[in-house]
Length: 202
Image (cartoon, helix red, strand yellow):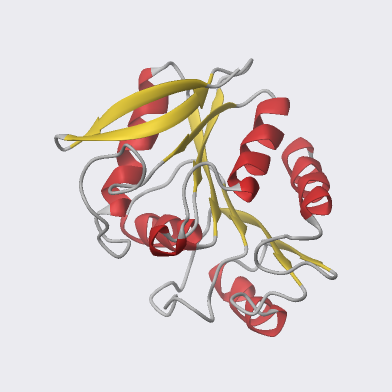
């Protein structure tokens, strides 16, 4: 059962939902773009957290600065990387030994740039990285990126572009494209959950 929590990021209080799992693994789940209504209650973010929770992970989904009851203000994904680090530290402080990252949309951009400048130990999963909407050109390698899933009808993460980028990020990353799914998973959400579950349990 998720509980409402707050944790500190350089004096800013960030709002999250935390669920203590059964094993020593945790995952930070990041949400879509705040300027377009993205928050931790997004349906895709909720699905990702539930899949990981069902696999025994401790989960933390949270609102980036300036969203919901999180303090501070939106910073175009830059200071949000500090938010991500604080979320990871929250999980580590709760006894987790391994912390993975699962991003959706804007959240993937934040994770990618955080991983670019930081030694990430856990695995990384991307759901619909919006490469046609946000600039991923600085990202040339993500050794910890293990799994990417997106929709065949996603205009923000078009399959042709995603198929080109993922091997550059990590040649060993598994990529799945869901037919008929768009960026918001108005259809195909259940299929995304099945594919993510299969990846986690593999």
